Every structure is written in structure tokens, then in C-alpha cells.
Length: 436
Ligand code: PLP
Image 1 (spheres, helix red, strand yellow):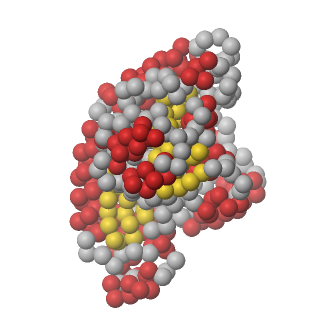
Image 2 (cartoon, protein in one colour; image 1 turned 90 degrees about the vertical axis):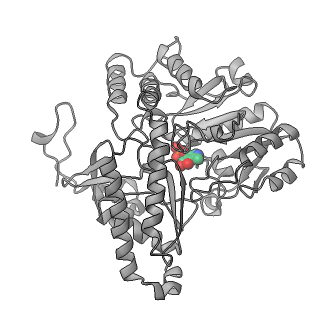
Image 3 (cartoon, helix red, strand yellow; image 1 turned 60 degrees about the vertical axis):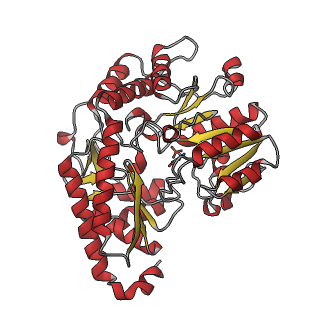
């Protein structure tokens, strides 16, 4: 269905009446591959969202347990929308010559909830840009050797890609940054051996690996990493782009073990899923060079008032509505219920694991994840795949999800699994595993 001008809200540009469908335009102007992917997931065209729901052009409604971790507040949280609208109507983008209050207020709000010891903020737009800023801060401190974790994901700009350890994404773009090593995640001894190679290292690690397929490290790992970095004079960057802002049922993954890194990366839900915002939150020492020279690392829209108003309102909403505690409680209940739902299908699902509202279902074969996502779309539920783990489907529902919506999600997973089981019953496990 094409939106006509009569149906279009005042002030919104009506859809063009010629030139074919949205899909045609994807194929012509964006990416044929992306258009194909859209076809694979039913060809739906999303046009609106509210809370845990996304609406499509044809009047359909989907429960959003995906969005790659952005929607911890749900979609269009009213407090964030009001703050953004107010800011659009007053001063959306600053001159960058004069001082501007919103960026100062947002930095203060973020530092008030950040782990103790972090004192300065560099705002950016994407997680990858926050990673770039952290790599540059490390370099200003003389840390030129990069150590990241196997399976780790930190974005796809050239610096971030250098430490995003997947050959598939790196190969077409080499050479990347030099002097990068990867060590196994969760293995403090392997890290110790690598750090013994010299004091110039910058270690980048996620508290729970997301794109690697929701990999939860052993208890004590993060504090061991922090301790090893201190012992070896290494710089520690904790990537909380996915795990931060309550996603794990705590404000930060760092809180699980009381760790303060040199730099913490934040993104995704930081601005309530409304305006793209990320941040590199640093200790005063790590930030020293950026502190002295404000032109050392700049970007036109960094800290724009519209993004900052969203950020401050989003942080306030997490506090006011207890979203961190809700993520913990809802997540624990959902984990139990999903484990019960998958129990009859060990030939399809190997494990369900998670912390807070970051949950992973590990399937017995890579092809099954794609099929499960399609089945869930048929059940009107949206989930995430994992960029660095072909066998893991991830659920990242919002912390505003209601008990009825959780029931809907669990029933949809149940129905989708039953459909997969009909296609691949238990006796045919070998064929399923080789399906991809
Ligand atoms: N770091 C982590 C842990 C992520 O999960 C992601 C994105 O999924 C990024 C960094 C990159 O963020 P962006 O896609 O906004 O560049």
C-alpha cells in the first residue's frame, strides 16, 4: 500500500506516487542484497513504532524483541520524544563556537550513572565512532598495540574493524591497523601471556559478548582483566555499547565486578532509540590529550543539542521508571520460560543463555537461525541474528515490555519451534546440523 497525501500527517512529506515500491527503491538506490534480505523476511515495510511494537505499511503489528539492542526504552518513549521535539523547536544543532548547555547537561547525567572514576565524555553518533575515539585516546597514552577478543564486535569503521575479529568482515578491507592481536574471550591466562609481551597494549573487551552469540564470561574474568591491565600498564577499554544502559539488568556490565576501565564505550540505548548517540566515557588521565586540545578529535554533529536532549531524557527515564531493575526481573523470568519452551527440542536448540534482557538461543546448526527468524516473523515477532555467531539467535526486548507481551513472545517462540520441529524432527538431526 502506498501512503497517500490524505493519510499523511501534516508537515510530513507524502510518499512519491511514481517510481515503484519501497523495495524497488532499495534495489535501485540502496542495496540489492538488502532488498533480498527484506524479501526473505516477508517483504514487510515498517513505518511506525510505539513501545514494544512496530507497525507495517499494510497495517500489521510486530512485537519487537530485536532492533540489535537499541530499544531498552521501547520505541518513542514519551519523555524522550518530548525532549527531542522541544529541542528541535529551539536549537537542534549548535554553532560549535559558543558553549551550549545540552551537551554539558548530558555529560553530567551520563557521568552520574557511570562507574566511579570516569570523569570525561566524548560524544559521537555510532558505537564504531566511540571505538575510534577510544583507540585514539589509547594512542595518546602511548598504547599502540591493540588486544581484542576472539568473537568480539566493536563496529566496522577501519579502526574498529581492526579489532572486530572476524575474517569475513576484515578480508575485503585489509590492510587494517597494524599490531593487533586477538586472544580467547574469558581466558585471563591467555590475556596475561599476551600482555607480558610489552606495556604498550590497549585491551578492548565486552563484559558479555553480544555479536559473538551472548557469551557470558566466567565470574571474576572482568576483574582479572582489569587487574592484568593494571599490572602490565595496559589501557583498558570496556565496550558497553550493547550491554550498557541497563540491558544486562545492571546499569553497566562493569558493575557486575566493580570494574573501572580507562574508557567505557556506550551507544545503542543511550538516547532512547530516537537519535543516534554514542559516547567514549574516560578517566581524566585517559582523556588528557583530548582535554588539552578540543580540535584533536572532532566531528560536526558530535554532541549536537538534539542528540544531547535525547540522551539526558533517556537516562532520566531509565532512572524514573526503574528500567534497570525491570530488565533484571523480566529477563530472569523470560530466560526460565524460554528454557522450558526449548526443552522438548534438544535436536534444534542446544542452549538458551542470557543476562537481563540480552538473551541468546544457540541452535544446533547455522541454517536453523535464519529459518527460526522467518518463523518468528510469521508469528509477528522480530528478533536479531548474531553477526559473529551463525548458530545464535538473540532476543533483546525492551524493559517496558508488559507481562502480556512477554506471554506473546514466549508463545511465538513455542509456535516457531513447533514449525521447525515439523520440518526437522528429532531423528533427522544430522541433516539439520548440515542444513546451512
Ligand atoms: N560495540 C558493540 C559491543 C556492539 O554490539 C556494536 C554494534 O552492534 C558496536 C560496538 C558498533 O556499534 P555501531 O553499529 O553503532 O557502530
